[in-house]
Length: 141
Image (tube, rainbow, N blue to C red; front, side, top):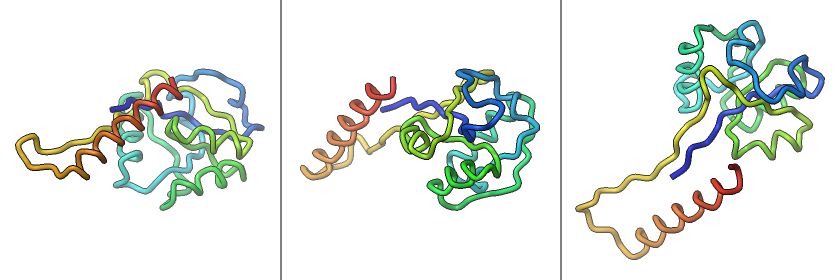
């Protein structure tokens, strides 16, 4: 349904603030605030870092993604945010930076059994979700 970029979030006073694009390896020596192992986003970021040949320095692991911005704003580290959440980061006076080498993005989708009965409510919900994410993708492209 949607391919969504994963962005780096830094405090507005950080040395990387204002950069438009950086290679992922650029944060190899940065303190990173990140979700705990086992979250979907964390697993993706770990894979991206492995591809870039870096190991993150992680002083803080969080349970609630919404607290990431507070940690980063307080200068406790840099973090990662999905593009759909970029507005919240901007409201916190943070800088979002595009990552390269590798390009960091995730794919969101919806699945159902094709030969399984779907009620009218389920069909309507499926269509709503597909339309909603199509509209969102146009907004972040």
